[in-house]
Length: 447
Ligand code: GLN
Image 1 (cartoon, rainbow, N blue to C red):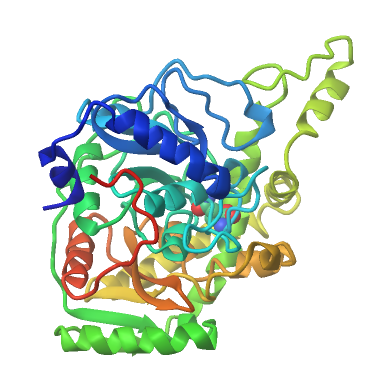
Image 2: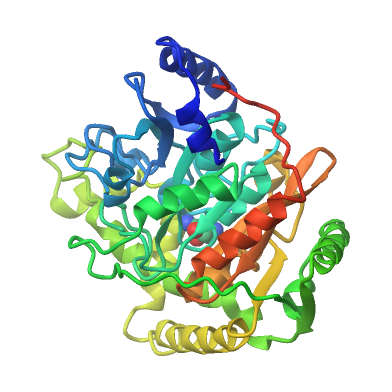
């Protein structure tokens, strides 16, 4: 029985939801998982939405000052599809507009429920932290280049990123339209299976959303890509090797292969994602959407440059980089080339995925402290996306699941499969969970 069915079968007192909200408000003072808590929740299995997913009547800020005060008058398809069996608990913290790997690009970074000195991962920082805090809860999260896997791994929970196009993006505030995906962070693969069954299906508001028969092929070969193994920190490599041994004992065959082009994925990703982000952010000029700069006597150019000064430093960096790579004089050298390289990467990875799954640790390093990542240069920070960017760039479904604990902090592995083969890897993680028990430090809302 997954925890959604379990929750539904349990007797709940009338005071359940108000008590949950109180406990959560207290915990949120330390962990900052939520930007907004819905004190009005009175029924249903609690779910949260990342703060770039619209929920009718609740402020959606993408953790950005530029959107402060924006209250959408409609809900994202993913939110409406959860239906009345689920209850909306709040909007979760994130890196501003999804730009980040650790959750620190937010006014008040979310903190890791295992130890609040440590990062949660990002950009769906609050979604993963909320999941690690609460016994009964699922999070709607979003990934563009790893934002579901990274925080799921650092917070010791399960993060599922579906095939691109399987879940409608209607009501999602865009980062990079060719990459963005709404997915799920939960405490088990069973909760993921239950929830994603409700989200899938075509949507007349999103023409990129397809209804595809999701085949489950149950393959037994696991590919480990040598080039990805090379970027691993020693302290991650040893536990990962022992995970591979355990999986071999479960009947999987591990094959080590070369895939040279995968080393280029981070570069390709930051060109394409910044190009798309810079056009998406062009709409925030201070005239519309939330934050009102207000000085209407200024000249037009001054007005909107001054309003746009409110973006955080990482958003500004993406705007500058993205505008540069698609400018007429260099476009062929960067943006067009990145698109061709992406195609090549998809073909090469697909070549492997027809015979098995690709497995790696989710993150190349163990969970860092918040003050440690503040010291990283942008390039050092982008480099930590080496393992999570490839499946995102290619639209492949993938799941991060906890597989070990180092110094009391969880570490996750990531399994990737071919397009529309999502159920196979959900099944893979369900099987893993029959042999490995996840640990949680908090169980808010336990019955
Ligand atoms: N770390 C990557 C970035 O900053 C991915 C983030 C995401 O998936 N939103 O772009």
